[in-house]
Structures are given as C-alpha cells and as structure tokens.
Image (cartoon, rainbow, N blue to C red):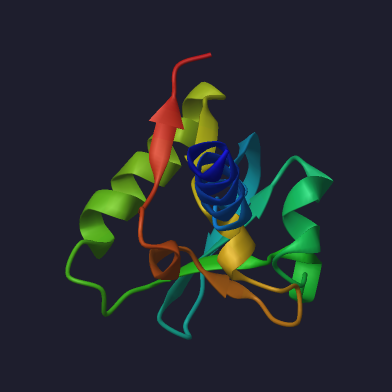
Length: 113
C-alpha cells in the first residue's frame, strides 16, 4: 500500500509540474526598432499566456540573443511556408505581459504540417 501511495504521489507531482505546449501557424512578424523580433501567432491560445500589445503582437525574441539570426531565419521561413511554430512550456508566463520566447527554456521548434 505504501508503494502504491508513493507512486500516486510521484505521478501527481510530475503532472503538476508539466508545462503547457502550444503550436500554431504564424500570423505575422515585425522587426521593430526596439531590438526585438515581434511575433503574432494565428491561435488565440497564446493570448492566455502572453498579453497582446500593439497590433496583437505578444511574443518576441531579443536581437541581443546570440542565436537571434538563427531564430529570425527559422521564424521567417516558417511564416513564408505556412509551417506551425511549436512553443514548449509556454505556461511559464502568466498572461500579464508580452513574452520573450527564449525564456521558456526550450527555444522554438518548427513543425512540418
């Protein structure tokens, strides 16, 4: 019985710490003068975790990030080809501000539809 209860406890603790992952096509991007690549996803699910700002943009990547050229190319290509962007662990954000995608700890993945 103790092993069973311990197993349930471990299962619940693993589930409790699992993050939410979302995937969607990209609606639009903007490279703004503020040093950020701004992104708006087609799915409104992202708005629950990242507060929309001007023109609905709610996700960004800092130009100062060492991998910025890679992310820019990846995201621009995904937009042009209609591929879905997969963001793991988006639930680290609470919907009170726009979100730096690199802060999820997983970066960005492009899915082949």
